[in-house]
Image 1: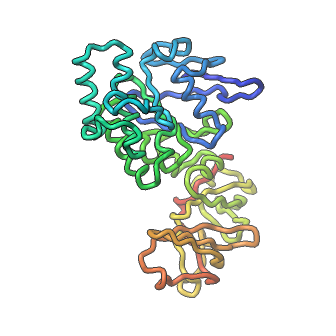
Image 2 (image 1 turned 180 degrees about the vertical axis):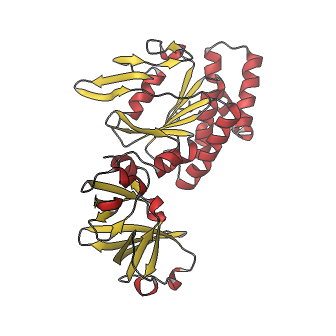
Length: 353
């Protein structure tokens, strides 16, 4: 994609987006509703025509080529299966439209049934299948024509949480076994982090950051990206002498990258909830750099972990994630306890804006 632009009236849905998507990778377009990710996907599919820019696949510009002539296929959120056809007939439909010889169609359908583990459901109709099985039929149909690029528009949105998590790994395994290029659109951060080799976070029609999931999570380029990907605490402060940061919430923080800022500069720091430790004040020893004192206001029990909301200043509340090693009844820190929050200097990320 080179400098793609798409407008709808006075609204710029995609604003000069340039992206390199590598062959054989699982790439995710991630962002909130209205950020332009679906419009971008529809331009790749050929359902929308760019107002400017190019869509290059193997050196060929697809931007003016009809959807049915592109080596691209798309799997929709609704699955769009034919209700009167069986599973194998749904998978075979696109191959029949291309007038592929019957023996080759039968061979390809059997291959897709095996790949998606649908052999025993081959003669069932869509209304006789579960949501996860229908999802696999749609995927098999999309893959049957062996496209160079497969586009997935919120493909797991209709599934319940446990099934969605299991299907994410199935998608990754299928993509790796075939070696095809997948591009998925989603607003679910966990889904994007699980399936993708790289992802692009979008905002207002532009790309805010591109990188591997770990890179985007651990080193967000902006306050927007830090806040959108997972939970985060944003700490405001001012750079003092020697690179120490005087936090507005009280205390002093040390961050290696802050030494590049001039003394007196206002800064914002990202700190993930799981990067902090939590201890009762009377048991925690002396307070030093990279610590805050506060009082527990709320506790959210999530089974494997608990989220503590700690008030550290009148206008500042911090989230801390803690693994539940003990039963809830044996929790040593509870509501209204005075606690010390501590973290390593490497846990802080200096945000650029």
